[in-house]
Length: 564
Image: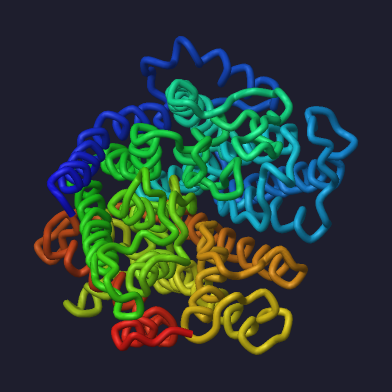
């Protein structure tokens, strides 16, 4: 890395830290129902949506009703996207006359965008109409992100309320997250992206004659509006097939920087929102520090791996294969770490072309459960499951009943926490194993040896942990992968959300015990170290054998100059 690279990375991290308090404080006011500077301009929209849906601002739900409303709403979104996919050839805003998608691709994509995974087994410019992209995918980008935020807010209420069985209203939380947070930020970013050259049009694709005399088709469309929310909502689904590596989707260094910042902006700020809403800012900063430490370490390891000379390609000074020359290695590495840490899944370089250890860092970020900032809302409620587990282990070590924020952590809470933490890992390992021993699972594999295994493992890790990025080199637009990965996305999303809401309901019913001399503090460096240890141990124990068979063994083979 040269001086400019160091300056950019330092500025990126410093700006992320600087923006966390103001945005976090703003979101705390939004979800506490307090007035804020957008109440006047957008309050009418929130009120209108609630009146249209017959929802009262003071409505309360128990965890089961909250969960039921969430599942019903998401199921309707799934049906809407599936219907658009299977009928787009007869619907308007399809200037290229694109045909209907297959049922298995429609199922996979509808599940993908409903679960905030945004896995894409297709190229958008050659598969989906403008109407499907806007009414189907862009809308789900908003509401799936808002769903994750709503679950986090419900968990925060469970931690702060005492002796009640109410977690607020899913409909109110969903509306406020969409109207006051996601919509205004996306509008501003979309306008900046249009300024930078990202298309935003309903015109048909352009046709030009190239220098060689052959006609070329230039894909266009309402891209900027979808790209803005895909980054801010940690969705990641690209308007074009190669995602943010496409010059129309990510045309300039400024657009690249702003999109990278957007990957982590809301997840980082939600840690401050959390501290603000529980009345303990230090708790939020401890979680932020743990996430930032894991991010920086992951970036450092990934960059070091990319800068390492490859014995299989003598004389190569930097690994530029699969990367945009206009962006360079540093931007590609930083994006790969941020997008896999943030449950975003967008890419500005091909992860299949990363060196083994660099690809392994991206894969490990997925396997941790997307809690290094993670998805909007989802990353923090996943991290809070690790916090509860760490508190439980600390209680066992000192011989006291474990407590967090004055709430006793009991056996049922730990069982639910274990389900939320372990099920996605089990799904990805089982799915990868089945793929490795079946003809349908191996049919689309482009590489042999450990790299091929990593491609399969990455696909299942991305689906089960709702990331959506693709390693590449694996053909997944088949019935086997479309249905299999779709099922993994469903389990990975709702096998975490349901236990989180159940824990929130359990905690809300408990009374808060005052701190005592034996209370284990959770707002200091000691707890931060313990939390990091628990995260790494759980992640390593679950996935280290699989990592050894993939990126780790490939790294040593690379050092020996061996390829497959």
